[in-house]
Length: 192
Image (cartoon, rainbow, N blue to C red; front, side, top):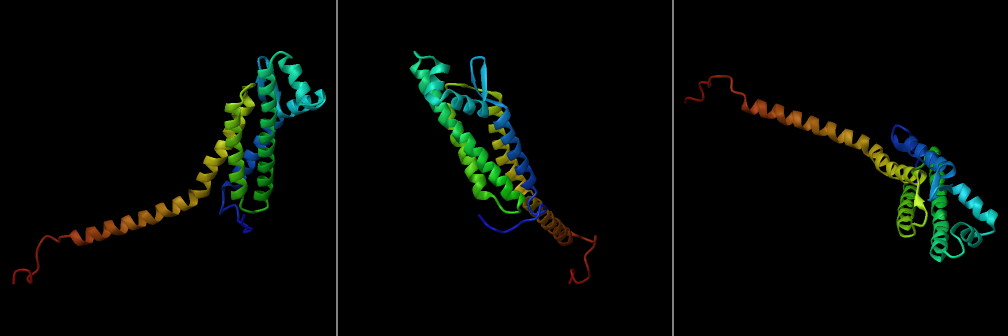
């Protein structure tokens, strides 16, 4: 990470990325991420339930039932996958603070996107609990952070390139017009 500070005019994506980080953290804390039938769990409620039960083993036995070994195994893997979300939230929070301090957060952004992708892959493999609205919104926020943030980072460079291209095309057009201009008659030197 570079320690070079930037102004908001140089990097307009700063506040967008901070906003998506805050929204993601709110989504993790309040929105339901895991669903089992009619029950939904936010990350906070799920972790509190595991702690109240005395560990993931006891919580899994209570939730999945004693005879459901597949359910217990999948619930245990879902528990460990939740830590990817917590790590992603921590990285996004650190990046938000870093960006507000005026620093570049490329390494932290890359780590956040990698954690988001890793969680999505782990979710697809170990899908005991069904997806819920919070998970969809959270992953959408990470995706928007990557795509819109990248666009906002490169918008100024795109505008400068477009302006230079317009000036060049206008100069070429004027040069062509000057070269191809014919006043309507040839000078006397033409006929000699």
